[in-house]
Amino acid sequence: MYTAHLNILMIDDSEQDVAIIRELLGVNPDYPVDIIHCPTLAVGLEQLQSGPSIDLVLLDLCVSGELDLEVFQQIHQASPTIALIILSGNADEEIALQAMQEGAQDYLVKGQFTSSHLRRSVQYALERQSLLQELDTKNQTLQSLSHQLEIANHQLSQLATVDALTQVRNRRHFDEIFLLEWNRLCRENHPLSLIMADVDHFKAYNDTYGHQAGDECLHRVAQAIAKSAKRPADCVARYGGEEFAIILPNTDLAGATLVAETIRSAIHGLNIPHESSTMSPQVSVSLGVASQVPDENVAPSLLIEAADRALYVAKQQGRDRVQTHQKDCSSLESRRTLELVGRLQQALNQQKAKRRDRLRKKSGAIVTPQ
Figure 1 (cartoon, helix red, strand yellow):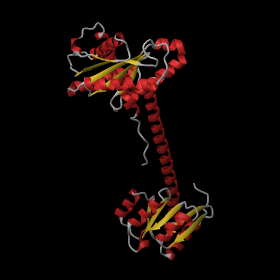
Figure 2 (cartoon, rainbow, N blue to C red):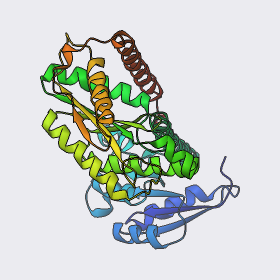
Figure 3 (spheres, rainbow, N blue to C red):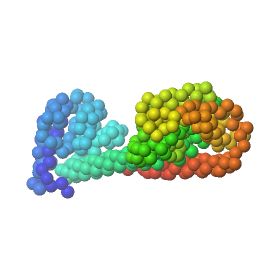
Figure 4 (tube, rainbow, N blue to C red):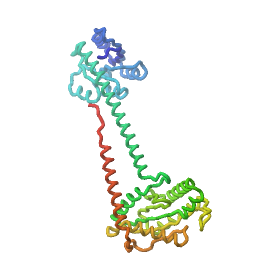
């Protein structure tokens, strides 16, 4: 039961009706009420905006000269958190129901309610409005928590797919994206290219400058590669140690070779000294490039092996160069094929399971006011 002093704003153009309401609410000394009377809608709206705090509004729908719910809607939009009771000389149940559906706490017909009835209506209106505000607050909290959880899940997902040292994608993410792109381009009959890049004489660099300098070198190289593979669909990943892999969807061998040359030039542009290198005074990379239009009869791991073989040739021929694999990947015979296919398929299954978990986490219901 509310026992604190209540400020009630009554918007009504009838002084007589205001006097009646004052009398009906003033008969109980334990129920202190202060009624602030406004004869017009404009004055009432101004009072809500600049006057003392209002706990409840008593509104005559005919204050504008005719029965119109627009009067109620203006008040409700101006102060949606304030409890509002409609007073009307019209007993039309359809209008009453519409008003209640749009947010009024009660609809009282003038001349048809007693003092106790009016007090109960005021009391229940305040309690219901308080519950609605509490529910709204809880919903906002739940929505905020849901948003924070979504951000946290995204961050966790990023952490699970990003290499901590270089800040490009990790091997796990490479496996997932490579197989997804292979399957997609297999359906679309478009080429998929792969570049394998290896930092030349990196062990010697570590031995000369120390592991901390080596880590910084790998980070700078990775970021230079990432800037060279500019398209959103391109994926740059740390494949292992000082080796990087670049997935280029919808790219033929000529286009991938241009990207590889851009990467090689970008690494030169870093001007990282490497006095222990036998072929360059600065850090350089060797790159192997392969391309294939995916086919369901060709193992996707063969493209990886083709790029890896091209990288091996680039190293054998003196390093700091781009070597392409010119033959169709399906002509390769590999003892690693079954192993790579199994690993890639496992990566895809893990990705599907992760997506199912995210969908389950997002299926929680939000509490809504009744």
